[in-house]
Length: 110
Image (cartoon, rainbow, N blue to C red; front, top):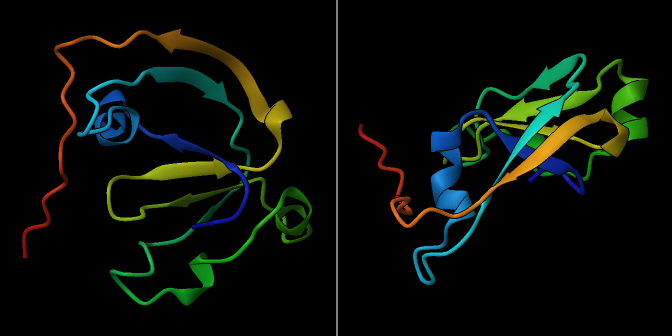
């Protein structure tokens, strides 16, 4: 969606469909503290509003030249933050897979 960055969900619940595949039923979750800095916000994904500028290859230098440190967007399955500088990661821990976790499909109601 937004180039070669590190993508983060905003809650543990939002990671279920991303961390655990429906086919294998396995995966893990990382709990990460991140300095997002000044955030460039896209209102939604390119498929729910035609924001064609979202499907581009951003990088740390390009964002910094515009005064931003990270990007916030929703690709259709939950809000995400994207950073391009790994030094913005403050801490990280792995949360092991639990059999009670289930992959889910995001439903969109109209």
